Image 1 (cartoon, one colour):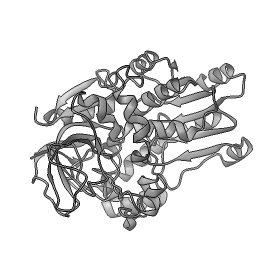
Image 2 (cartoon, rainbow, N blue to C red):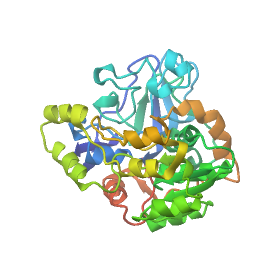
Image 3 (tube, one colour):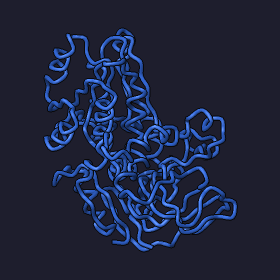
Image 4 (spheres, helix red, strand yellow):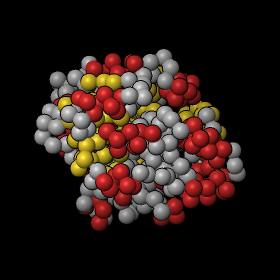
Length: 393
């Protein structure tokens, strides 16, 4: 089959790889009809080379049709149309029963002290072949699927794999009071949905984003947007009677604008031999924390900062005095996809499309176009906000 593979820093290619097979009786094989490029895929493209092997298949936002099931699978049948959550969980362990599927004790990657295994996402998370491919093996398939109907297009459902539940969790973790003000840092795909979810739930939503096309998209959904300037935090403080937003969702993550020194350090680690680079990232890795710092400045005293953007540093410096003095609460973590599906499935199927799932994708393309679109997405060229690939076209 064809699959999008990692070949080196800023280098991915579509290659012929072996078709996936049933390895455990609990597996299923899915023919992929749509698969998206996620903002966190760009971290693999740029930073995580020490934890990836050449030829690894990327991608963790797929959906498709079941074409084969293992002998122990009882909740799926050939022909079922499903979305595949990005985290791999069992549904019955201590963590899963508590709605913490991203911490599943059955699939935790204990070698690296990580949570649940993820599709297409480095040795840190199990090195499981991903879904930017024509076919995907789904472990623990009875639980690791979201069955959907046949009538609506893929784009209605595809984002249940990751970014819609990630945004929903981010807003829920932000603990916005009724009728309160939610600030969103960054209007990439997760930020777009976090902002729209805030509007849907009745909050005043203020979003900061340097790209004009991303601001324009959010404004179509009732979001008040602001350019990333040196004075934007002060402007938003003025709009909130000098107190700040009740809650802030940071939807940016480790590659935020700012701190050129950390950017250089991240790049330098990528030039080292993998074994040494892994040790440095594990013990001395740094994130570009401009979005976190701005969130801390922007949230009101006693408010909540919710981190939905991916962070991976182990030596980050946070302003603990300010955080303590302002009595800020922090919530964060990988999304527990299955926890939120009952809330979200009716919204993505609603004919009114209240979250605007049909107003996100800027680029549909065949799988063969993926390498060029990784670069386009990373550089934010051609108005690129979300890419959906169609294997087989």
